[in-house]
Length: 638
Image (cartoon, rainbow, N blue to C red; front, side, top):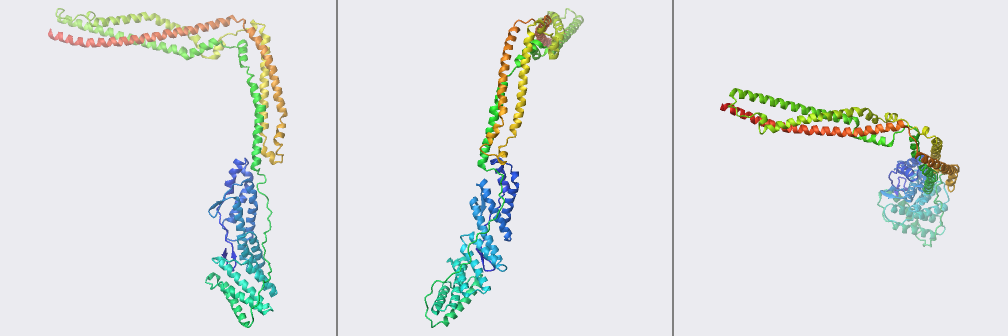
């Protein structure tokens, strides 16, 4: 407690740190309670504002401020119901909800005491009431606060000229409230006030007591009390010490006047208790988070929603998915397409895939271009060699004629032991090219002959159009009714699947509307909420059962027709034109493979021939370079 300028004590409030209800509770509402924090924005802001305004070191304590703090205090238990584990910081320590409430209670007591001290000079009656409010909220300082309220009633009694006997009773009760025997700090001040009011009450009683012995005993008691306090040195207590000194002088003077009187026996003085703890009036507030569903209910509602989802999935959705798996009619449709529509036989499709993988007609054209290029390279190199040999022979012939054949000792090139085999190889290569001419022409003819047929393979629409219809229905009259029955079965099955798809879409839309939280907030009974919702799906359950029975009937009919169709299909007559066309395509593919093989061999042949020509050309160049040296040597010797 601290001493005010009016001489009355007030409680120092506890300090607390800022607590952000919006940022702390919003995630809890969203994540743990699965509700929208925006729905409770007013409550969260209200709590924030009240706590900040009333507990963040307010500069002035007013009744309105206290009312707001009481409002915050009244709201807190509702908050605790939903969020019991919140932690707050007071005096640099984290505390739980209970301690938050205790500290608020403490600060309410402090605020009432501060407000009471501020009204001492203007409204004694209101000040006394606030001290009594404060006392009801604080056991630790209750007697001091009540003592100050009783002291105010004492002052009021004086100003209203009450009887001395009543004032004495009021005064002794003030002393009783101040009877604190601590000797340090503010407690020494309280004890001094205790001494002051006790002495004051004894002095007043002494003045009005008819029994002089008892009156002197009162004065003796005062002297004993004075001797217990000694000299008062604290400057803060100057006024109180002066008041004590004044009474002390009065007691001494009175005691001296009764020097001849024997001290009598002093009994207990009667009291008049005017100050009592008064609980501040209750404050009615609108409960916050009224629509916030508690966690235990939330957990149950989440289980309901999960159970509902499992019901929709396991009882309605999954059975239809599993039923649809058994309704795959693609194989039957494919077989009917082969019978009734334009379709490409499997073997032709395989040919097409292989042909495309091998490169098709483009591959043949590339091979033919490569073959022609290599062939021309070989031809060019051989022509250059023959020109080279011709020029060398003519040159040597001229020299032999010039120097005389009898003096020319070089044999002709073809007779030379080294040049002869090389020249002979070139002649063989010439023969290879001549022999390959027919094969090359054959490859070219093959490519051009199969080109239009191979081109058909490249584009599926053209391939389908090229192959004539099988004309199964026209050539096999017994097939018509079976095909119609199968088509009818397939149409019925597709209609059933479409019906289920539509049902599933409607079911998802309906199930999406189920919100256990919303239903609970609207007042539906928690225990029957899920059951009531599932009961609304009786028609959907009936649909699944009926759909399952429909499928059984359809599958039975489809199986019967499929067996009959398979039996007829084993001996079907086919259009002669179709067979002929398919054979042409088969032959074209086989021709492609043969031509591809021949073209690859032709390319390989000319690659090898070109390498050999290059190798022999290098040998010839080496020989001729040495030959030139011999020619020079012979010319010099002649």
